[in-house]
Image (cartoon, rainbow, N blue to C red):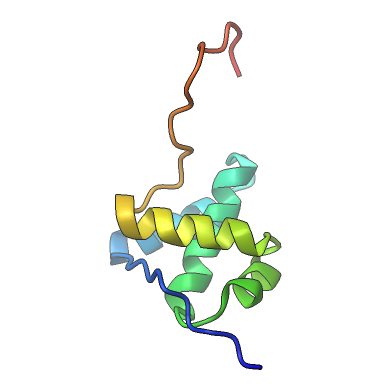
Length: 93
């Protein structure tokens, strides 16, 4: 059975793609941001791929791919985590 097309299709500007390329190539960038940058580049190149196929190419879970596709479409593109609720950390990262 063929996989359905993803319902969420984020769109990326040339500036966002350039930033994603730079972050994906950095050695000292936070690992989560590098993964999201790689995800951005794969989605920009192949927007119609299913969640499992994109996940396989990026080394992520299909749920994570779906989450970021939905978030980027609804809230705009960012490589940063969303603010967390609760008490702020009492030590520096």
